[in-house]
Length: 244
Image 1 (cartoon, one colour):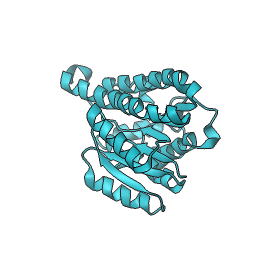
Image 2: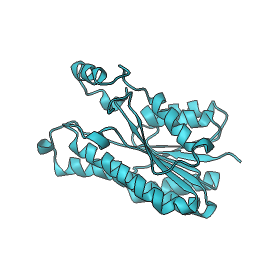
Image 3: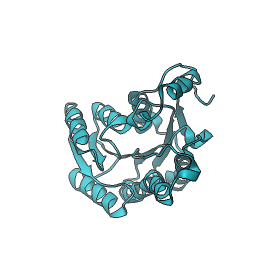
Image 4: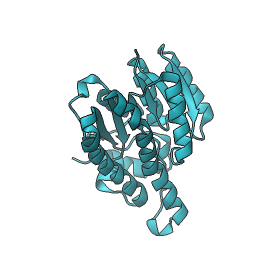
């Protein structure tokens, strides 16, 4: 029986790369998206080329009822959830003092609240099966902090703390919880950075390049695999050496 994986925010970027990578590894896939329906359908088509079953479900991760809909539909389709990749995230590139309370709230609701919602919703099935893996996508900015991204950094730091605590809590139930902290990745989220900013970030990365969504997908796929069965509560930096 094929394992089933939910990847939040998987219409494009890192999430899409993870969905495609896991499909090629033989997992049935649930693509979650909120606004980017066309991109989600493109990803769905690509995933199905791997010969697995896949569905695309719209749902705002920060809305508990919408998250519940995604998980319930996933269980209807596959009867079990073996993998959850909490990837969905948003960011605002501004001085903290220029950010509105609404902007701060949205970032926290999506980046942290989404992780809490989906983790809470998949755990009963995982606990029942005494098996499962949750991989949370954080960021190097959750480790070091980034100017102009204070709330984003705070949300990603919270994801790291949650990962470690939840790993202790559900480890006795046979569930692994780990975290990937990407460095600067060539995705739409970083398109707002200037060429000068990108050059500075590359110059501060020992491997002298931006990361790709596939770089993060490779690490995530490893943490989903049986080879990672004795790894839990860990934060794996995939950042080209950015925070050595």
